[in-house]
Image 1 (cartoon, rainbow, N blue to C red):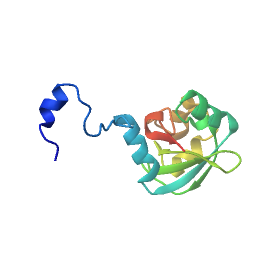
Image 2 (cartoon, rainbow, N blue to C red):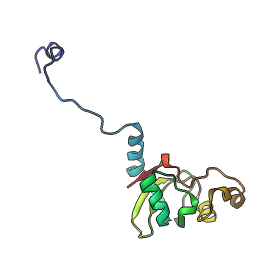
Image 3 (cartoon, one colour):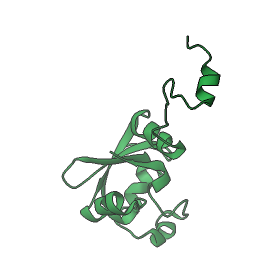
Length: 132
């Protein structure tokens, strides 16, 4: 126990340990996404999509996805891998695997005509995506 700690701190003496947060609220959510949800499927991306995610912090659009693997529902965690098979990101899917199969490789404005509705223009929104 430190004697007269408040008086000494007020006088400017450096006592104790200062703990600064390393991660903000958004970063904490991304950390949770990266490691605490079970993945349900895989999206194989083309090189352009990998570049858009890594360098421009963009959402994953259907046009940048080459293949859908596994079975997942809307809102479940998917792994995103590049053409080389290496994991690039993880994120929450806006469409099920069956729906994703129908829209991959297509521009976002074609989603409604392909599915009969459009929930979101992105397959995975950047707020629900974490790079690994």
